[in-house]
Amino acid sequence: MTLTRSVVLGSGSYLPSRVLSNADLAKRVDTSDEWIFQRTGIRERRIAAEGEMTSHLALMAARAALANAGVDTADIQLILLATSTPDYTFPATAVAVQAGLGITHGAAFDVQAVCSGFVFAIATADALLKAGGGKRALVIGAETFSRILDWDDRSTCVLFGDGAGAVVLEAQDLGAADTERGVLATRLRSDGRYQHKLYVDGGPSSTGTVGHLRMEGREVFRHAVGMITDVIEDVFRMTGYSAQDIQWFVPHQANKRIIDASAVKLGIAPDKVVITVDRHGNTSAASIPLALDAAVADGRIKRGDLILLEAMGGGFTWGATLLRW
Ligand code: UT7
View (tube, rainbow, N blue to C red):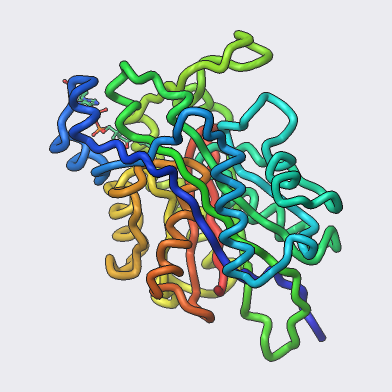
C-alpha cells in the first residue's frame, strides 16, 4: 500500500539589501535599541527599495528554492503565495511570480492569512497535491510590510520588516515502510472575533485606501502562547510525535519572548529553536520560510529531520505543521 505525501525538495529566500537598525529607528521615533531588543529580540530588519515590490522579493526567493531543489520551472504546476502586502489589490501577486518564472501552465494564487499565511499555504498546497492538483508546488511567503506601517507609531513601526522565503513541494507516493516523510500533519485555526486586535485600517471595500497596520500589541501577546501551543499539541496528537522527537522548532518570528515562552511550555530545548527575529524583525508570512532557509543554508536542517512550524497573527489566525524534511 502506498501513501501520497507532499515532500520538501528544497528552499530559498531573499532579503532586500537595506538594513534598518534599532538605532536608525530611534532617530525617527521616541524609542531605543534597549527597549526594542528587550521587548522583542529585534536588532534590525530589512526594508525593500523604492520600486521593489512583494512580487520581486517572491520571485528571487522562488528562483533560489527551485535551484536548491534542482527543479525546472517547467515542472511546477502550482504557485501559492502567502502575503498580506500584494503588489496590487488584484490580480494575485502569485501570477506576477508565475509570469516572472515564465510559467504559463498550471495555476497561481495568493493565500491571505497574515502572519499565519505560510502555514495556511503549506496546508493548501499539501491538500491540492494530494488531490491530484499537480505534481510540484512552489509555496512562497513574501511581504513588504514597510509599505503599510505608520512610521510615526513607535508601538508598531519597530516590529516589522520585508523579505521572502519559499519551498518546493512534490507529491510522492511513499511505500508502506517509508511513509514518514514530507508534510505529516497541519492544524489551521481562526477566530474573527479578534479581527480588530491586529488589522489594517484601509482596503478597497471600506475606505478605498491602502491603510496602515494597527495593533493592540499587549492583547495579541496575551493570546499568542496559548493559541500556538494548542495547535502544536493538536499536531502531536494527530501524529503520535512529541516535543522530544523534533529536531528543529521553526516558529513565526514575531517576538522572541513569545517564541521562548511557547518553547518552555512545550518542553522544547532552546538549542532546537531557530531564531531570525533579531536580524529580520517580523516579516509576517515570510518569516517561517526565511527562518527555514537560514537553517538549511547553515547546515542545521538536514534530510530526515522532524520540523515543527507554527504561526499566529491577524484574524486571529493560527496554525502548526509537522513535517519531515
Ligand atoms: O505577527 C503577528 C503577531 N504579533 C505579535 O505577536 C506581537 C505581539 N505583541 C508584542 O510583541 C508586544 O506586545 C509588543 C512588543 C508589541 C509590546 O511589548 P509589551 O511588553 O506588550 O509593551 P506594551 O505594549 O505593554 O508597552 C509598554 C510601554 C508603554 O508605555 P507605558 O504605557 O507603560 O508608559 C508603551 O507606550 O512601552 C511603550 N512603548 C515603547 N517604548 C519605547 C511602546 N512601543 C515603544 C517603543 N519604544 N517602540
